[in-house]
Length: 356
Ligand SMILES: Nc1ncnc2c1ncn2[C@@H]1O[C@H](COP(=O)(O)OP(=O)(O)OP(=O)(O)O)[C@@H](O)[C@H]1O
Image (cartoon, rainbow, N blue to C red; front, side, top):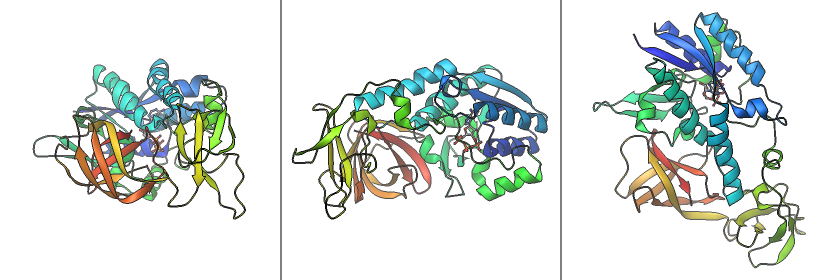
């Protein structure tokens, strides 16, 4: 019989994932992943202790083994460093995507395999299908509102082949209903922030601990100085709030269009479709990775520029082994370097890459 280690966050989705696998007769255990963030971060109002108690209570209720897997150091190395270094370089990192590839489906999955498990399971809203050639594909979760394929865009085939996603076939209300019907102790718990978030802490407050402020000018696209900024790491392309430059007399707000690292300047423009640098039709991708076979020919695909964005039609042209050029049918607002474009064929996730 297959032995499965279920990643239990303390939230409802992973609890129901465990419940479903247990009902299907698998030999399962539960594990909570302890990360640096929820241990050492003095600023965060972090619910880690509660999550540990909740995940333990779920395991007890289901009558399965439970352990806490301590990945504090690995989290600091793979996720926190990536986050801090990314902001220092002027890109907008995506810690959730990195956390999935490096932590949950990296170190945690390896830990499970080494300890006699055949596969891991999580409460992600995605579906995995096996192809006739025995490879696996990831499809969007049936609940389109909860679909989390975007966050798994950089997983490799071997990681997907050893993972199960039992709630991907369900709608969120059905998951809650199942949790209530089976009296899971966390049935009414509100959706968790999981392993990869900073709790209620503001990202700027977090970064203040790692990156020194380096004030510079705020300029428009003609180079006219409009004000001062405290440090470019505090801003993201597309940001409107907290720029600190008053609107013009027509109450038009400013939006960040570029972080100019060389000149240490924050470039802003009025939030209009024709403002230079705000909308883009063409991007270059680097660090491309594919969930199954790589896309090696130019073709039309769908892509999600951000987690909550609707799918966009793109023309995709490979330019190297892990680089490509992408042309959007509709211009996209405020894409930031370092963010991830997830590639799809219909509802099948193909992979993803970073905006240059
Ligand atoms: N600290 C953790 N320990 C173990 N597994 C975790 C942890 N955080 C997240 N996971 C796993 O990753 C999945 C997706 O995490 P995410 O943070 O997106 O939470 P979610 O979709 O709200 O799910 P849940 O309701 O289970 O928390 C979870 O369902 C769980 O399987």
